[in-house]
Length: 483
Image (cartoon, rainbow, N blue to C red; front, side):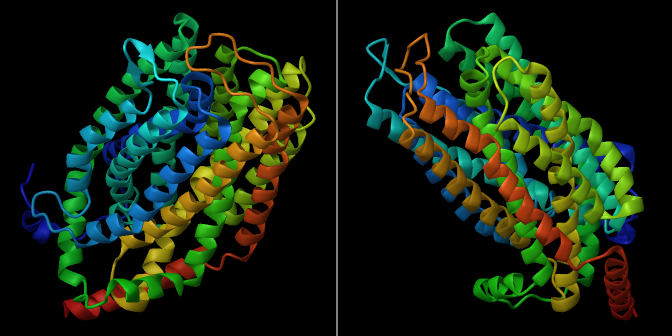
């Protein structure tokens, strides 16, 4: 293996086609963040209320603070990765290399209930501040490994359809990681009776897998990234643009505004549904905690299978039509969940499958749009700023999600949701008002978000033809520089 970007300079032309080994390694980079994020989305709110004994409103506030802090980090980390200079690793990989282990450690610490004198701490505010502090640090390291990873997509290939293929590998690991985490949760919840021990064991296993997969990605894509870095250094124009001017350029990029809107609407639907599903399964459908992962696996398993179907269909039908088809299925499922009653298990799993059909397009389509937006920016400014574009995309997404989860937590508390006491084995029975709030959060609210996403997708301006024209102009500019 070569030691620096200089060794790649004579072979700096990067082929549009990626080999299977590189795609596989790149996909593995999303396994760790996907496992940890999935466990957090599905179980962290439930862990706070049903294990640590924090009221739902305060639990939602913990998530709100963490997400806002996480969002604030993104554009700064993105900008710093754009400016990072490492002859051995390039711009993105040093962040992942040094951040992977702390990322795993602080994820694990979120799942501990602090104890004093061999007993759990029952002071709500002590618990609140413990999880706030650990959550803030954890989110920093999540950004440190995940933001540089996502910004590598346009650096690995500049081909319009190849990017969709690359993202299908990424989200195969992402959804596969989600399914794996749910299978692990199912096994752990079945084998271990103590609720607190369940989450400790699950967090330990997920931490080890997450850190290992990040290092697989780092060493697997290094050659390709260094080849791109050599070409970028040769062709990129000197940058004399301040941070505030970069912000102005980013938000004057009209297609970018559409992409972040589409992504925000899609993932509000995904994450609000995911956070409320455990409450829905346990309280509204009157099933056991061990049944929660099974329902989630039905959603994510369908999403994994459909990922390959949508990836192939997008080459024939285009990204917009694929998004419309997937979201339509999910909207029908979301509307139906509101009316489900205990005992209607077949209908519940049918709707889980229909939701999974749409969830896969929420993964695939927005992330395959953002590299096209970055190339439009390069044509307009002469700079490649993947980090700051991905940073602000994730920032706005996290702001929206933080606000959404905060509202869900407080809505449950306002509706009379009863949290468990730390160490309590039997969960309290919820009043009818809380059950209605759970139904609204799992059905109508995500459905409204998805419908807004469909409107934005309809007006998204970059087509395959427009992207081909952008690449042609960029190649002409590069040819002129090479003369």
